[in-house]
Amino acid sequence: MFISIVELHDSIPLWFWAIWFFILGSCIGSFLNVVIYRLPRGGSVNTPARSYCPSCNTTIAWYDNLPLVSFLALGGRCRSCGVRISWQYPLVELATGLLFVGALLYFGLTLQCVLNCAFGAALVALIVTDFNEQILPDAITLPGTALAIAARMVDHNLVGLPWMNLFFEGLVGRPLPMTGLTGSLINVTLGMAIGAGTLWVLGVGYFRLRAFPIRTLEDLTDFLKRRCVVGTLARLKVRRANGKRGAVYILGGDFSTLSPEELAEAEFASSDTGSPELSMTALDGVQVEVGERGVRITSLPDDLESTVDGRLEAGDTIVSGNLEGMGLGDVKMMLFVGAFLGGGMTFFVLLVASLMGVLVALPRLVARGQAALQYAMPFGVMLGIASLVALFFGEKGLTAYLDFISSLIS
Image (cartoon, rainbow, N blue to C red; front, side, top):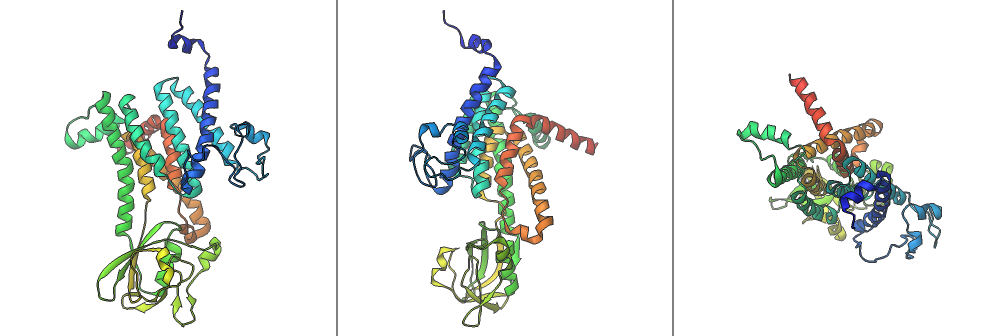
């Protein structure tokens, strides 16, 4: 007589499932290491099919690619070239394995547990990639969003919807559907709108509205060297020689191999012609002078197009600069997170991530002052960690937060 799946589940102890979930999680963590390494470099997770050493490009044998075990057996070094293997590899495998076990213990052996494991694995890849490269790959966030919507059509998510209904009913006088597929899809829509919409409005609003006037050489130096965060987008508003207005986009920060200290000290350098010349920025080699209501460009190097998006010519006057406030990668990530977690939990994610961002930024500002503003904070790391917190503790955390706000109001 065949044993049903329910009977099999009931007959196997929890510790047995936990062991297999840890093994499965660590194996997926090993795959995530491939994703984390290849995607930011434009590679494919399918080609080459086998893992290889980044140092000597030797294909790694299966027995040297066992999660956690191989790292310990090899003493943390490549068998072929002897180069030390980054601790990131076993830590990602360990973290993913523990994440899977935590999901099993918290949610039980259910479809919800399986979906949460997949969501958590994607978050691990996003967190580590953003920490290493300040990149949140579209290859994860965009398909992840589609899969999250599909998942919520199968496994309905109504967590946090009652709190969203309080605001909605207060505004329009009608309650939201609170059950079944309709309620789940409404929660998905609210999550995507709150998560991605909030970051998009903040980012675009800051970029469009926060302009830094540029009237002197010192203003331009301050904008290019101190206000431009390394690697993010900045817009320079220019007035053409014919009086028309335009804009060019540059990447902020240093393009050489200078240390942070050298970058902070870099100023205008004198050129052979006697005119001030910009050095060690995206406008490397551009010669400028103080003009009417701005800084006028007197000459440009031929290869400037490699660092500037848009037309920039001698005779143009730079009048102001705008900075990117939030990358679109964060916006796309919150589409994914919002679709999976829903409106209430996504609000909690933004709350926790913002608090984490403040706690991380304050010590750097105190220790380094304005120089700390020169470097982008990988906010995707904060969003990813906050999403994991919300996955397990978001409902209790949101309840505690709303109770605290209610006590303050009353």
